[in-house]
Length: 104
Image (cartoon, rainbow, N blue to C red; front, side, top):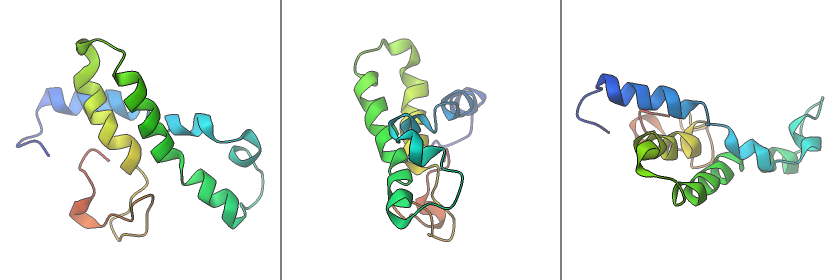
């Protein structure tokens, strides 16, 4: 976590948040757009999207220039943790309280 929340850092959070659900691109449409309740198996698939997104971002970040690296570093924190919950009931890592990165 940064020592202070500078305007620049907050801008990185705003810009990075746009891609928080990029992992959903890997979820089959039949599950992603299912009109009713998900089965336990389908729910597990949906809950994998933060890790899929993180993996995707890691792959593309090796191929781009340094001009956008700062925003990508923040996105690398947001993507895998954006479904964590303060009480520890989130996913994919069941982080709790201050274990959850500020950006997420």
